[in-house]
Amino acid sequence: MLKTGILNPAVLSLLARVRHTNTLVIADRGFPFWPEIETVDLSLVDDVPTVAQVVTALRENFVIGRVFAAEEVKGANAPNQLDRHLAALTGLPISFEPHVAFKKRVPHAIGLIRTGDTTQYGNLILESA
Image (cartoon, rainbow, N blue to C red; front, side, top):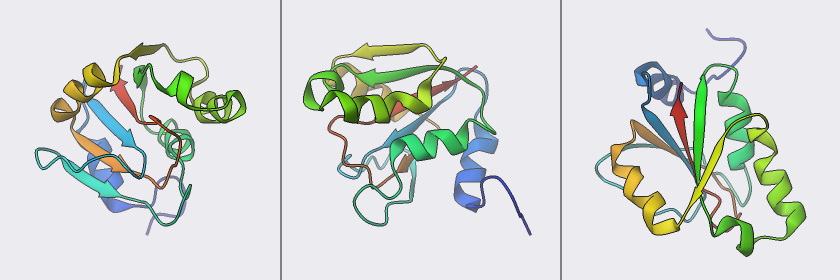
């Protein structure tokens, strides 16, 4: 039995399949279903867990080379909300791009982890190093 770190077996399975330059989507509660990729749904209630909480947990076991985010996240959220949302990405290169371009990356991901996050355009794509 696992006692520390990530305990969710579906999340561990996704992480075990990520290789160099593969991607993993961390999505908010409203992100659409993508039948092409495996989805692990961790959402419980609004903002439980958040995208930032999931990223923080993943960083212990997943080497992130860069992050993709929708440009719209900057204008759709109050500065303090945006700061909290991006705090888990400290030290990582972030590429902001139009939401339409962001969504074109999604079907190429190894998997998607859905959260309860209510941050507008708060979805992230993590690329392994």
